[in-house]
Image (cartoon, rainbow, N blue to C red; front, side, top):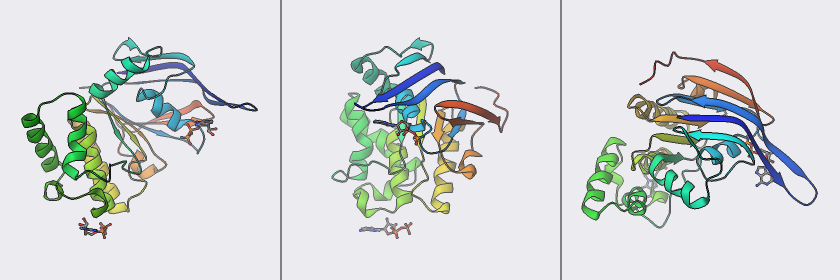
Length: 230
Ligand code: ADP
Ligand code: ADP
């Protein structure tokens, strides 16, 4: 599903040029769950932004389902992103002015799903995330664990093939964190590919494989579970 080769990314200001990705290469198979770990500043967020088609690399290749997307312009990236990728963030990134239902519905409006279908699909995913009883509440009225369940509902509403998660349990206590990891595992069992950045060795153990980064490069890979493919 993902094959990046010799990926490079630089950030330049007038005085300094920072190398954020320095020849990073790895593959992720369809249906796999991969954790990416490494110290602060090693390039994890930069990597997720590129994998999520939010940013483009300065060098190297990025094959997404066999298509070279490294040179895609914003319009093409946005189109591919809307239909294929769901994001889960540490700080949930819900819209405070919208209800739970409206937050989860939004990606369906962007992809042009009609109103009656939207209602059915949002209700179905809210049931699955066990947050249906809160559908008329606003994000600030929910606990952290509940907000992350809404964020996961929003991430999966367009049935993406890939979920990118950035420290998904970073703002949660261990019990809510484990619940979120169980939900991600269920989605992965159902066939969704997951790439998750985490500082937590505990959370990384839910994955099939841990990629460890340092200074914009991959240093090691640990295989935790035999991934048989789907
Ligand atoms: P991580 O997510 O692993 O903490 P990042 O991808 O955020 O790492 O950052 C990688 C490197 O790129 C760091 O040295 C960081 O300071 C730098 N960097 C990230 N974003 C920017 C930016 N917008 N402008 C300048 N430097 C940046
Ligand atoms: P937790 O202990 O799980 O972090 P909280 O203490 O934030 O949760 O909230 C406990 C319960 O009260 C949760 O079910 C949450 O949805 C609900 N709740 C918290 N704040 C509000 C509020 N302002 N309005 C309505 N319900 C709330």
